[in-house]
Length: 237
Image 1 (cartoon, helix red, strand yellow):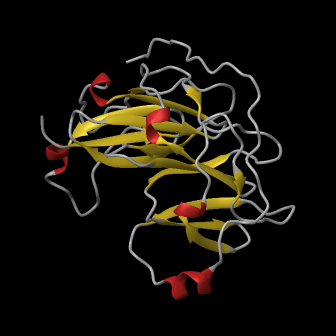
Image 2 (tube, one colour):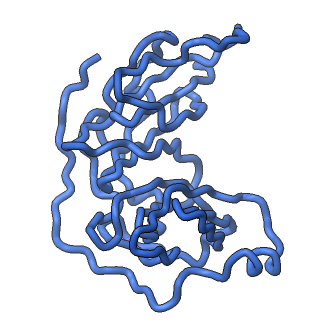
């Protein structure tokens, strides 16, 4: 199987289209996916046909499933359900996990954590998934998630224009069902709105000049007993 373009939307819809379908672009652009009213594309990546897919929601849920659970479709198709969302929850990140490493999750109020990628079980597509991070009023909803290695840095920016860049190695590695620690201190009405992995090596003096490290004195918050069994649901294809 060849290379595919894998897409995910905020409503939890996913779609896979062969890269060759985009071999004849036009100056005005071509349709890549048919979006329903109110929906938006939140992530796109290239896949091999035998990868796995992870979808992360604002409410702290994640579903991980095999790519081959999604059949290839034409450019104008809408797609199929990737994750079953509750209430007004939405998908915020798409990750195609590659190799070893960890998943870094960051929330609106500046909290975050690393969790080993193998702690996220592979389940069926179109389920509610399992807990990725414990979302509370204290840490806020999930802004995004990225796959990281120890040698990476991470940049976070708030809606007030504050940017923090820090070493991934300084962020605690904990289980899925925890709130994490403070990565960036925000004002009462300030929220983290974006994060980006920085893979290029950075001189220590340069990094220290941008920012120091993770906020000191913040410990991981113990998880509460809570079931995160996934709930099966048939996808509408």
